[in-house]
Image 1 (tube, rainbow, N blue to C red):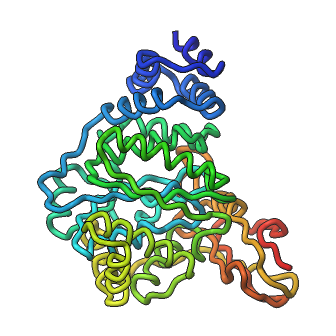
Image 2 (tube, rainbow, N blue to C red):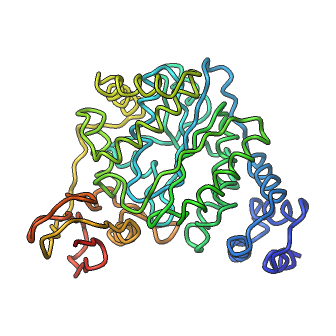
Image 3 (cartoon, rainbow, N blue to C red):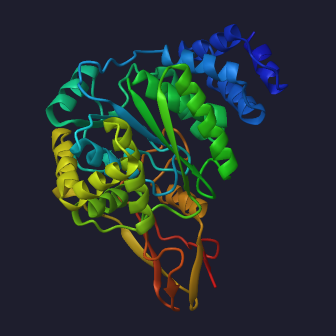
Length: 408
């Protein structure tokens, strides 16, 4: 009985392989309902899972659909994943950098989860950009231009797609084992040789402390090792939004600014360089210092931006048609002082309220709305200075900003 399995996990007991198969494959096949799976996910979120459960459920996820064979693409395939955060548009920058340095880039991305934006939502905010591709198209594109960034193919870990959407609206996004299983099953099924994971922690991340982030990283490494995959972990803070832009089209424009003009929020740029350097180090088997030098060169030379343009054109997008078509409201500083804190979670929730994220799994994203920060932590401001601009499409609301910035 499904209810017995749910109750067993509710009581904190370990589920057997057969029990995990019964409820998760039952959900995949439509024999277990959303409300039953939601109850199990909440029990997992509260009580956790053993390594034995995690390893088996990862196997169930991987084998729920196709496993991509990238052996016909020469070179070491290095994949990247971020656990998500407010304003995290690093994939838009990192993928073309890595591809411009000759490492084949096959990047599957997802949609927004909770208060974080999804890379697919950002890419689809580029007019005409197509994110759906089958395996044959993916292979051809990587052979042609060395890079593809798309949704996972329809039958790549289909179980994760179903559970992922349900987690988003059932309060179970932050479960450490569910995050690890979701991420690693997709990376394993998508054929990556090596994997770089950017795990975020802090106010605007699912992992609130570095200790939680380290536990997640250790679990991901153990999962990867069980499949013979090298997994490298980077930890980054998400106490403040990453970069200046929050919202899909705004974030695309910020990524373009870094690639095209080498202009960016310094924290955002440094993280992109750090992640890309690690990926190049893994892909070319060179030192991190050598890789960093190559990464910086490919940005300043404009080669990374040209690779981004190739990607967008190949997938039907039109950079020239990107524009923000929304109402704008500036929020000003109520006093002189120094920016001590910019609360990532508050801004993430505001972005969802504006329409840049999803509160229900069938919500439609508005690509134009969001927030643009005009300051960063540590900046001095004077009374009346613009702290941020809101881009919104609904009737103007009384946005309260007492809890967003800490100015002393």
